[in-house]
Length: 318
Image (cartoon, rainbow, N blue to C red; front, side, top):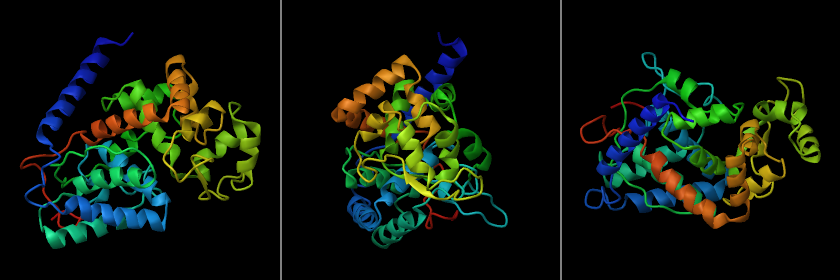
């Protein structure tokens, strides 16, 4: 049974998301920058064609932006002598990437519509187009977000879910942003693409028991047990079709082949395990739910109206 405090907090987050929905619109740039979607799509498709992993990187960049003070492009801000951004936070350092792709989209959009399109909207659209490029679902992206003039290193360290969390910790991290346990399972399916570093799955493949033995052994050659050795060696989060957006991530969990501790945790309750099993045999259901959850995530705490600014360079405040 949820406590009254939990329910009150959850309702407040939903109210905030509803307010954001009312201010964002798919046609926001219809008259001011109609070329924005096609320009962004072209850059994303080229980037993903060069490196399939980039699709997952752009999705993750949007997620790591939205979970820290809302979808405001704060993650893009570089550190300066007088400003500390979020790039050096533990979940982001030596991990988040794709900044150059966002820079390229911004530069091309600025040439056709200077001072109009926000970096936050670019992140939202690039994430959608990346998923589509890798065979996943599409959804309508609402626009109208503005860019922050602030960032939160502490927020990035505290609000982004760790790959070492158990199911309760994951549920708490997502509920703090207004997501249900079901939506946690759905959004975790983003791990059907992308790669992870040895340092975040080393303990799982050497010390955990809820892992397929042959799977664990196959990973150990590229991820030595000694800390500091091979820490940055990469493995696909989905060992079957790691460059295709599909439902194999959930099939892997059913077979105890989740790469991250946090992924395999999704089968540790009856409700989430049932959902994992359902998605493992029904990709259409997963795709539909994922699209809806992404729209909801992209509406987390945006700056709108006269809030924030439209950055000229996504890496720094005007």
